Every structure is written in C-alpha cells, then in structure tokens.
Length: 160
Image 1 (cartoon, rainbow, N blue to C red):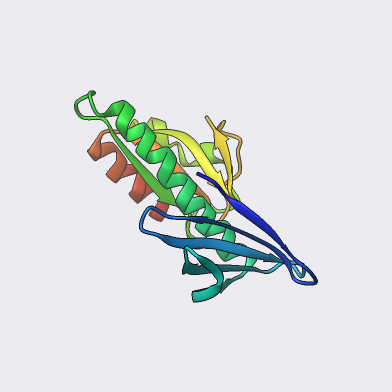
Image 2: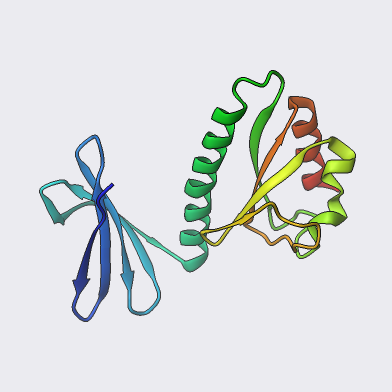
C-alpha cells in the first residue's frame, strides 16, 4: 500500500492512501497535536468529502481498533484449522474493575482458560503481555480460547 505524505506549511502533515474502492482516506496531523481523519476522491486529495476531528484519545482508540482487527484476523486464520479455538478482542472500559491494575490480577487464564496474546495500546502492540502489565482504559486485548472461555473472560473483565 502506497502512503502519500504531504507537508502542509503552517498546519502539519497529511498522510493518505487510495482504497480499492477509489476513495482517498487519511489523516492530517496538525502542529498543535490534533488529528483529523478525512475522505476525499482519489484524484484530488484537497476535495474533502468527509472530515472528522479526533482527540488524541480518539485517534489512539481508532488506531487500536484497526490494528487489533488486523492481528485478530491473522490469528483467526492461523487457528481456522484448529477446531474449537476462537480469537476475540476485548476493550478495557473505564468502569472495568481492572483499569490501572496488573493484568495478572484478573487471572484470566486460570479462571477461563483463555490466553491474552497481545494488547493494543495507543497504536502500539504489546505482544505476549506478562501478568505485571498494567491495564489502561482503552486497551484492546487480543485473546485466544474456546467460545465458552472467551465468554467467561468477557464477564471477568466487565465484572471482576
């Protein structure tokens, strides 16, 4: 995928690419630290069809969702031939009892048999997270296990 990067004097940097459907999608990273998501036509990136300003937290969450989906899809493909194994993503909500707590406190593997294989945080991947990794609101956990185990893990992360 070819990503075009364009300096916008006095404003920041535009980074975008053309999708298979012929639309241009990208972000403008403003010098003040703000981010704007935009969609335009393939032939004219200055003709904006949609624009969404994002806070730093929103941009980070969107990055986590997109990156986490890519990781989950790759894991699902790898486990496709293993009967009974499923991949799922869990978002750590602000009201989770495990916010700002080490992941090991939830005892996910012991209580549900589910393995947390990665954490997506602020656009970064934490692979094979150790039990002492502290969970933050907005983290996206990528988990592998049985359907029943994943349902149990979801309940644990929501309710303790």
